[in-house]
Structure formats: C-alpha cells, structure tokens
Length: 121
Length: 112
Image (tube, one colour):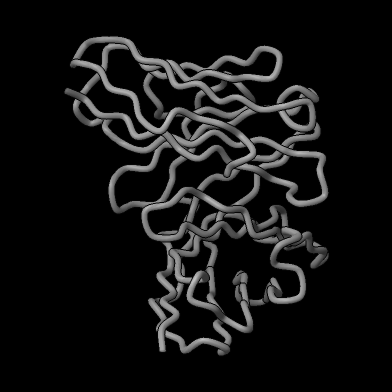
C-alpha cells in the first residue's frame, strides 16, 4: 500500500537547523510530488511548499522563503525538508504528503505520520 | 488568520446531520479553484476525505459529501457517529503571492 514514513522527533535550539525525512513506498516515487505541511501545537495546518520528485522543481510558501529547502533522493524514494534559523514558533508537527494533481488542482494523499520538531533553549 | 474561514466548532447528536462551511474569496474558491477536505482524528495525521469539491476516495463512507458554490464550499456529514469526532480542514489554491496552497483554520466536530 502507498505509505510515507517520516523520521523521528527532534529537539533543537534556537538558531539551529533541522532536516526531516519522508520515505515513500508502494508507488513510483518520481510520478508524484511531495508537499510539506506543518501544524503548531493546538493550531491548524500550514502549507510549507512542495517539490517535484520527477525534476526537483520546488515552490515554497513566501513566509518561509530563504529558510526552507526541500530535496529528494530518487535512489531511496526519500524526500527531505530542511528548515534553518529555527525559532520557537517553528515548534510544530511536520507532515509530508503525496501530491495528487489534476486539471489545475492538487490534493494530498496519503500523509506521513508526522515528525514533532521542538525548538527550545 | 487563515485565508479560508471555517467555524471553529460544530456539534451534533448521533444520527443527526451537520455541515461545515469553508468561506474563501475571489483569489481562491471564488476564482474557480477546487476544494478538498481532510479529517484529522485526535493525535493522528490528516486523512483525505473529499477531493475536487465532491468526490470521495474509496473507503470513505457516503455519509460524507461535499459541495462548492461561489466563494464557499461545504462538507456535510449525515448519520453522525461517535467516530466522526475529529477536526476537519478544507484546502484550496490561492492566487495571491503569500501562499499557493491554503487551508481553512479547521473545525472541531463534537458528537454529543
């Protein structure tokens, strides 16, 4: 079955960087893009950006431009999200999700289990 | 402040029907972009519930239905069950520069 498995929880100090992985299985990795979405404690979902697993093209949310980098390793069917210069308000559960795109729209299915990133001094 | 506006909470008794609204603007839903819905059970990742306004993935009960009109969309749940208690999010595109994909703020459904 299609599955996305993410790396484990991280605790980082302010100013540090974090890199979260998302390993895909059950489908042809390069046929779909991957989006990253985060959820601060008790809050809603925030789209961070997406990456094409086919050609590596990316599109990042404006508020994260310059701090986030999304990459893929097609040899291991793994997507990565790196966030730099971490602040306390980056504390959140980070999700990867497979993008289903059709006729000018896209939705996410399935989602990874989530990775809690805690930023604290 | 989310680009798409949802009521923070709705509630209903078992067996009843509830609806959750998702209100956007001329730069997202009103521009013709499709709406998708996700269900997030407590402590779990979101799960796709409705895609392209009104389509259910296989395995989603037909108690769940979606619709879209103008600058808004709605999710309806009939025959409410205790297991439906969850957070529900709508998602669409936005043509503004600040975001490409936008979510609603989420609605907490309580089954009384």
